[in-house]
Amino acid sequence: MPTRLRKVRKMRGSRTHGWGQVSQHRASGQKGGVGNAGLHKHKWSWTIKYAPDHFGKDDMHPPKSSKPKRWINVGSLDKLYASIVSTSKVETVEGRPVLNLSSLGYEKLLGAGSVSGAYHIIVEKFTESAKEKILSAGGFIEGSK
Image 1 (cartoon, helix red, strand yellow):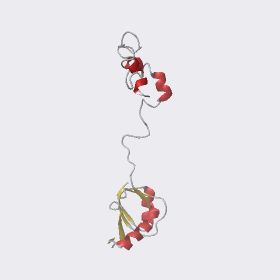
Image 2 (cartoon, helix red, strand yellow):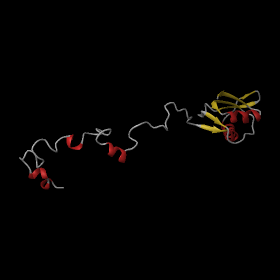
Image 3 (cartoon, one colour):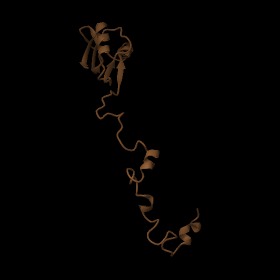
Image 4 (tube, one colour):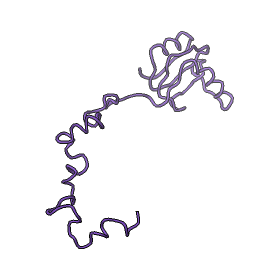
């Protein structure tokens, strides 16, 4: 809108610009407060209609969440070993090749799939099913549950 057509240009000198005698349409009093003022009081019906999740806490994010950022399944170990062997030399312990999953960036070993090789695995955490599959294949696993 052009400045010359605005109400403020036409009402120059009138002090209240057509909004009554005492401080009407000046501050936040006309709106019921600034920002989130009154959401528990006089703006409660607005809160229920437009922002029902404003108050309370989000139960989907527990304060001590411990979900690992990177994990790997038992079924992927053979493929991982093949890629490591092709790029570098692998050390062995008691005749088993060592797979240090912690140094590769994995935090947890999960039990999906099956493994054919007997590996010595070093990882921070693992599941019970992953441990059973590694041990049944003749391997060994270090870490905590």
